Length: 236
Image (cartoon, rainbow, N blue to C red):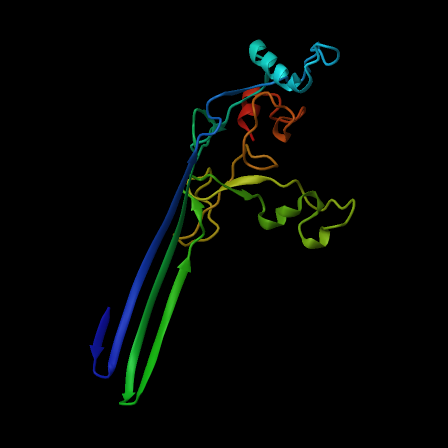
């Protein structure tokens, strides 16, 4: 917008930007059975003498696994649609809708003091909002960046100090609007992200755990999740 008045040329403008990206995949949403020897090795195939399989041994083992229906593992992903009370659902695809809000405004005045002298005066303000996942699926550290140091402590001073236990286990929480505690905000501006917590997050990364795979941290014997096969299968 431009306004001419006497020796002044006033200009001003505003700009709003609402960036958004969407990603989706359905890997292992349907149960996937992987054929293989599993924990019991194939024995009894001839490896010496006139009937030795030689270079065909691996092919013979694979063929035997196919005929016998031997499975090395079964995998299925359980994803959550998000929201204030997230649950993991069978058949739910993995979708992330990332958004960022930006704003800019300026005013200026081209003031012609003399025929050969013009002053260009103005000010500009720009705001860049925190990127967030629209359905509250963003994972953040409980306690902020200090949680990166885990059991050792809460700062770089605690690094490389054998035996130091000044911190706690690194845990994750859901952050952003539409998360379990959406009313809790990091800032008061309507353009910034909001944070929330959820009680079922444990230390480790957000992902999934294959069914019956109790070797993963989420399903390790003795863990809170290992006592429930369904919950263990849906975590990590």
